[in-house]
Amino acid sequence: ALLEAAIAAGAVFRQSSVEGLLFTDGPRQRVVGAATAHGDVRAPVVVGADGATSIVARSLGVSRLPERARSLAIRGYVEIDGGDAELLLHFFSEAQPAYGWFFPCGDGLANVGVFLRRSTYARRHRPLRALLGDYLGRPDVRRRIRGRAPLEVASWQLPLFDRGRPRVFPGALLVGDAGGFINPFTGAGIYEAMATGRAAAATILDAAARGDLGCRGLAPYNAAWEAELGRSLIFGALAQEGLTRAPWAMELAFPAAGALTPLTRVLSHWMFSTRR
Image (cartoon, rainbow, N blue to C red):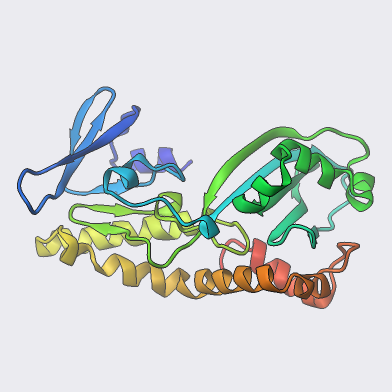
């Protein structure tokens, strides 16, 4: 739907794979386009929106994220009985910060998955699918799925928010996963991607009107995304760090049974709402 809306608004869609960026010559290099499998594409500004393994970010010299900012997730969809609408969350005391989720998403399906830090995953020596299977085998989850296998299982890397990560460059901006805009506590990033994309577009329009698409002209992008996302991202980073140091705190907030108390309802709304 987003692609169709962009085309309807006048965007030109070219499908290809990006191989790197194009820069001006000289000591003060500026991005002027991208090299793709189907030839060079030149543009006044390049927006890196190419995900967790962003080629654009690497071409800009952005270093790899620190280990504390690297996580993984696996999710699938499972058929459920129509009357089962309860959301479940389980924080694993033996592997913090990590949690499993089960929440109905309509049409007789529930979204189920597991989120954990990459360093935690490396210590456990088990495939992600096996960890998802462990979670689906919990009595309260098993009772809801009644032996049905998950569908459309997918896993991906999650570049968690790191405030020191550069996102503004002469002639280029990074948004969404490419910019590391994943909430460190919840693993959420869809709304963050939309919000940073919107902030990037507004920044570029203003900078173009002023005739400055360099770092100074694009610098307001940082203030724009911080105004909308900064509080929740910073709180998420602090919460993840606190959870690593005191996993017992989450056990108090989320009982082992996974049922939602008034406190867990507040936390769950914050974790899974599309806008905070």
